[in-house]
Length: 387
Image (cartoon, rainbow, N blue to C red):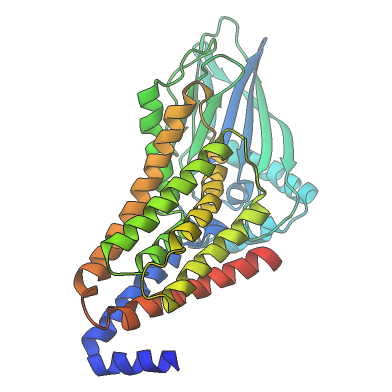
């Protein structure tokens, strides 16, 4: 009955209202265009040396490389014309998939060049460990180790990362204050000193991790985008939005820090369905609540704790430099906040600035958009729990 009343209001107010409603729903659907399930993960390389041997231990989304997907600038593997092959590889048993990696390795390794100040280093494939098949909708990391002979008198190393290989998080481990940086396809590292001592300064680490946090919201943080949009569509007034965003920010900052230092660890199998449920809950409450309730900030705070654990899992993927842990953590959090504020600003510019004072804003825009968000959240909750 409520839906029929909304539709009657929509028809009564005319085509301009219809366009506004379509714009609001389109805002949400644009966010949904790139789902988390097929998100591209960065490759992480831990570089270490011992005596006359250099070792590169890679944690990589090997299905994308075996499928021949160009990862440069790619946010979602569904956007590749090789996505079907990628999905098929996900379902292979570990030993079978390890064989596929081994077969494709000469092609994958082409362009991965490790050079010393004494000349290029020939790298040999040493170990391949493919993860067990879990939820085929989620990327599974594979562990690949390559080694090479370190020339005598070597002082520095350079790593070149091939075009098409996407983002690389490079870490020099086993030394004090080792080199750490991010490379994109086609880039080469700075000279890496074998003795270490190249860790970024506090300000450098802070600045380096701001885009990492921002990128986790826009464009990759679909869960968090929908949650923030759910906060936005509760009320057209600024006050309720500030209360909610403040509670959410405080909460996820707490669990982000605790998760980053390893004080709190919760399995993604638990966190991810609960995050989806939080999106649905907030959106459903928007449908029935006409403004900020007394319990809403507390509920948002509780859900913010969950989302903070999700943010912490991203930092575990990239790793924080131990020598500049606090500046990097703060930089990541600042990036997250900038991403959230950007989502709110875009939503305001798309619908809030034009329609929030209209008498039909809530029944024609806020409620239908919240229904869409709730349906997506409920679907994800079921998918991540049972499928």
